Image 1: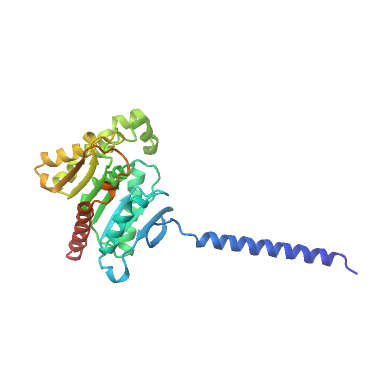
Image 2: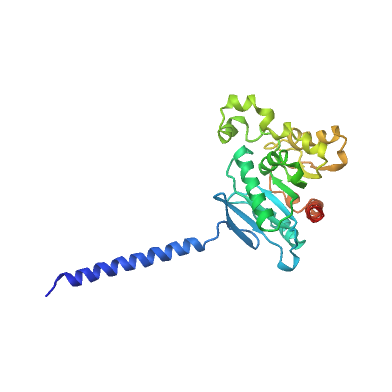
Length: 282
């Protein structure tokens, strides 16, 4: 009698059981969404980074599809504080998309990822060639860094206490590693990398912009950021293209007025749609 057969059979069963379990675990992992969203949509990878689209209902979609590019797309964002805004966007037929670039602080790496998302959506998903940007807090730094290099791709820009000056947030010492530079190297090339130094490009191009910003914001000071952008538009003679809503007695917080502002939402919807109309006429 062969005494090895029962042992061999047990071994084979154990291997098969483990294989089935591992396969099931892999399938479960594959079934998980790349990113959890606050509204119906889809998540996927672009250049290996998590990206998302929050879609309007099918009957409200268009070709080309008007859209908003949002930042900061991090695991926690967009968050519940913005849910009302994004619901208004999709209800109006506007898609919202973003890509997680990590804490890249507007570096060239993050800009390349923004471009990769833009190309993916415009080439493969029928999105409009002109997009309205939405930068919240440090997301303003990401958006404006990309915007000053691609003004021809913009239909508008909205912001909630957005960063434009890298010196105020995250400050040069924290930003330098994301740029692959030393502090001294970043300081020496600041006019090249700091979006506030080049926001006159958007001002001269008369890119429509609306911002809401608290007057006592200590994290992202209004004077050095949104206030300076407003002055650049004024100096360019295009003050009619920018609207800065100054909120007294508010700082960098979750005050509902920042996130339930109907004029800000209406502005984004108007210019996202204008971007799609411009693309359809090309």
